[in-house]
Amino acid sequence: MARRGLLLILSSPSGAGKSTLARRLMDWDPTLKFSVSATTRNPRPGEEDGVHYHFRDHDTFRAMVAEGQMLEHAEVFGNYYGSPRGPVEQAMREGRDTLFDVDWQGGQQIRNSALGQDVVSVFILPPSIAELERRLRGRGQDSEEVIAGRMAKSQAEISHWAEYDYVLVNHDIDQAARELITIVEAERLRRARQPALVDFVRGLDTEFAALN
Image 1 (cartoon, rainbow, N blue to C red):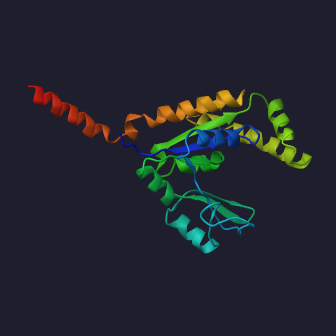
Image 2: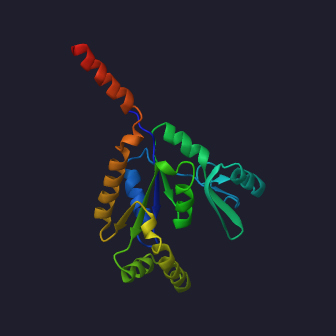
Image 3: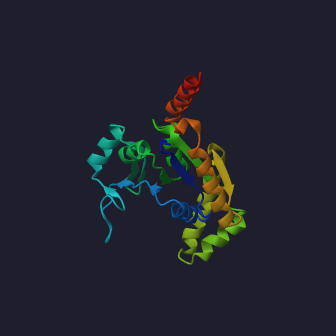
């Protein structure tokens, strides 16, 4: 039965397991796709327009914001980043879900957008701050300065946990992945996301009438 696609927001402090959970979710359902962001920064070697990012100049990006074509956007180190609205709306009409990997500010903008009623937001928490730091160090790719910066930012990120529909504590990545999949399965079955149900039930009523 046809349904309307949903907008799935995943947020967490760095090191809580958000990227791994997003990959697990897409492995479970390959039709679920990441929202491809737009940016005003220049492409890096190997990056393709429309695949890694939608590359736009500053004037075009600002015009898209002014025209309401961005679900969320932010300026980072002199460049703009944002989530275009058009591809997400098309996916929704086709019954496909879109995954957003955004911070609490981006999530707040999407929830407050015209598509907010179709948002499902999930915040990922670490089991402890000590474990969060251990995971960051375990990556082996960040300097002490970067790790300190990520840890400092984590407290501000975590303070917004109560703004989300669901909160998962990532004690174990396999369990957290199962819980995330359960959330998506349940949200897809919500009555509001199945517009064809109205006609289906009318058909049942017609069958009842034919029995009399």
